[in-house]
Length: 335
Image 1 (tube, one colour):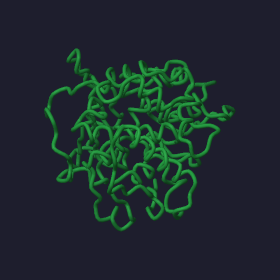
Image 2 (cartoon, helix red, strand yellow):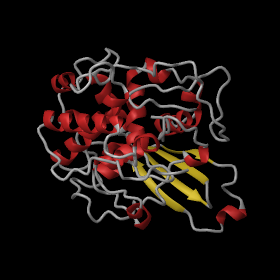
Image 3 (cartoon, one colour):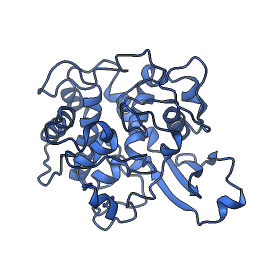
């Protein structure tokens, strides 16, 4: 996964296309979303969905770096963070980060043109990402379905060696080729000299713009991961936080995978015309659509993700009878 808000393994995406937003993705239509339990309150820890024994059983060949304790702690700690994103004009942004545990709220990003008259001419667009909703927002079955989808993607991104058994997820901490720097032009998140931003962690976070944006939301400070991208491969809690962050956060042109799997996202007219429909297949489009989608039903990587999803559903004791699992006829998003 290369665009985190990562998308294509093969395309370098300019930062303007990486900025989080939900304005063209139909996210405002939530009429088909499941009923929320305890709306407005912090729900139970994700540890209520999956035990350590179950986690170990799902990932029997995992690298020892990826522990159940790290996953749960990452979800619980990031769950205390809420981000309010406001866009002015076409691509002028402000991010306000709230630590729900302490009540502290701070502006963690405000673009230099924020207060320019030309930027204020059109009404602002705003949305909020609450990371505490990761696999905890709805009932047990819906939460487990989302967890199965998340596990399917991180397993595929980090698998090695055994086809069709689906027991080989979470084996890689970073991509095999670490010679490439994965640097792209970014005004907000410029690369640090000598640092490489190749794929790391469960979702293979890549490129300086993505490291900077993830760091802004996770830590409230872009420089932490820009200065030390190795944290995503040396600190398992940070690694899982980066993956959860990706899962929960929309892009300018895409909904979040969370909104898709929970039913909040519904396709607008453009999405429908391009074959984008709710279901697991849409999450493939979000994660790596440029490489894997709209290429027919025999795309290996797409089918591998589907296989992992179906495997994890069964392991978690649930089904997705109406799964729109394929993205074989679904056009990827263009930047």
